[in-house]
Length: 172
Image (cartoon, rainbow, N blue to C red; front, top):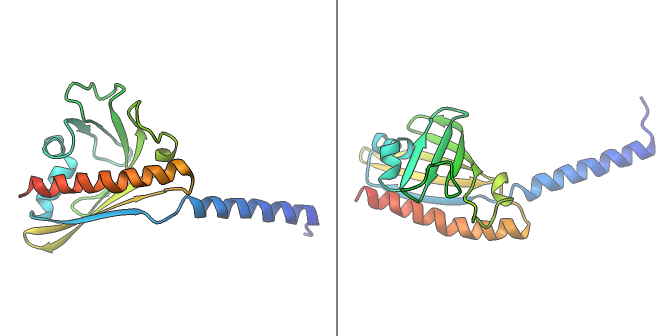
């Protein structure tokens, strides 16, 4: 089959756009890590249960821990978890005691980066450092090279560190 010069040019333009989109959406992740003074089992419990999450991360939550499950959170104790203050995450995958991956699908009404957040996802890795310490590494991926995404990246570089610091304090 012989392709016309026009078709070849259109295919080349299409590939160029596709590769450019992948490149701009795959910048380096925001990586946050720390050594938690607890076993993997204990860290997993505070990452994946209502009681655990509310002990260090947010004021109110519920979590349906399964691929495709919904994890709803709020920094307000009075939230219905479906109101304008709620944050919803879609559980993408998990490997008990090793990895949890999710994508934010609903943000509070006042969240300043509503478009950029839709392109990101987060992976939390747990590794044993020894029997009583767990290395937690959080990768937030999917940042673009547009202005909103760059600003959001700076926001999460600080915010993710604060969250991890709260997890470390939870086990002190």
